[in-house]
Amino acid sequence: MIRKLQYTAWLLTISVMLSSCAALGVPTATTFNERLAVGYGTVTQVRQSATTLLNAKKLTAEDGTNVLSATDSARAGLDVARTLSKTDMGAADSKLTAVRTVLTALQAYLVSREGAK
View 1 (tube, one colour):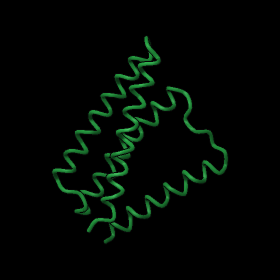
View 2: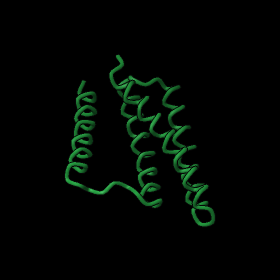
View 3: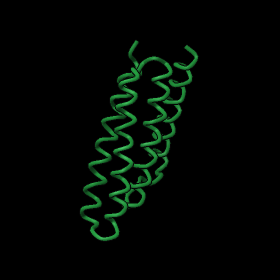
View 4: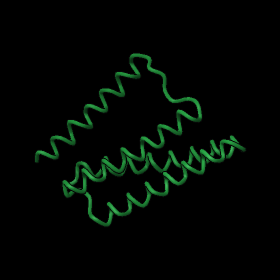
């Protein structure tokens, strides 16, 4: 119960911070390097969220392993995008967009598990 409250408080805090940043006009990531940095940060956030849900028994061990594997692949994809950016920015942007799509799907899945019993 305490972990659920901590997790809920954490999500609420992050949500408020993000909406506050947008309301205050804090710029969003627009350059390739900024978007890449957000991608790496998202990998960390997804892994932390999965750990919290696993500890709260809202995520099975198998699902936790799958999320871990997916974040490992996402991190590798971000590394590829970073390497590509030195020679082919179009391909780097495409790779970054694909990885961010996967990370967004992982985030949505974890949010759906938050409400699970």
